[in-house]
Image (cartoon, rainbow, N blue to C red; front, side):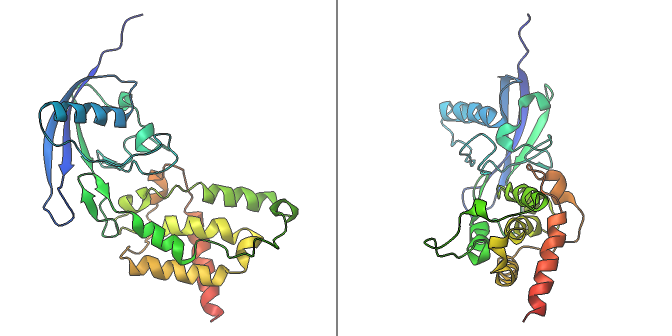
Amino acid sequence: MSEKKGLNLTLKVWRQKGPKEAGRFETYSVSNISPDSSFLEMMDVLNEQLIVEGKDPVAFDHDCREGICGMCSLYINGHAHGPDEDVTTCQLHMRKFKDGETVTIEPWRSAGFPVIKDLIVDRSAFDKIMAAGGFISVNTGGVPDGNAIPIPKKDADEAMDAASCIGCGACVATCKNGSAMLFVAAKVSQLALLPQGRVEAARRAKSMVAKMDELGFGNCTNTGACEVECPKGISIANIARLNREFLLAKLQD
């Protein structure tokens, strides 16, 4: 069996020393990249090359490298997480690129996600939205076993689908308005569909939407781009549910 030919690529990478510094694209070349390697492994090769040359390596976020944590958030050739469907950047393989191709790599672009350095952005805004209402308050000493509460399978399935959101921010980066509605909708839906989440439903919807607006995220105009680029395929049907939850909460004021 013949050995697969390695890829030679030109990389245009966004470099920015800090939040208040001016950023710019810098161009690098990498050679003999295995088509079977992941995108982050290619970035590792680039950084090893830069270190040998006495240059600062490119700062980028990563953790699990298994498509679970959502930290590997890069905007690649005009797509959140790159030119593949239903994958995070760490799951993107170099066989999706052609030999000799120029690959443009940027951080998320959003007022809600300021750049920390190079390709790393501050996504703590999502944590603040969750802290505003993405939870249920219970007395753990007196709560019945969750399995003892009958839940229709359809509701349970939809709640689990919404809960698969990893909070990577691809929806925000893709939206022309920088809206976080898909993220907030997923987190509201996963609780709104379950009886445990109904007690605080009204407060949750109002608090999370208010925090989202406060943190500078844009409005949703239903272009559907967020659903297309979401690595977990979160449906925009959740946004409709969030709107219903929010309007119901307002009517209860």
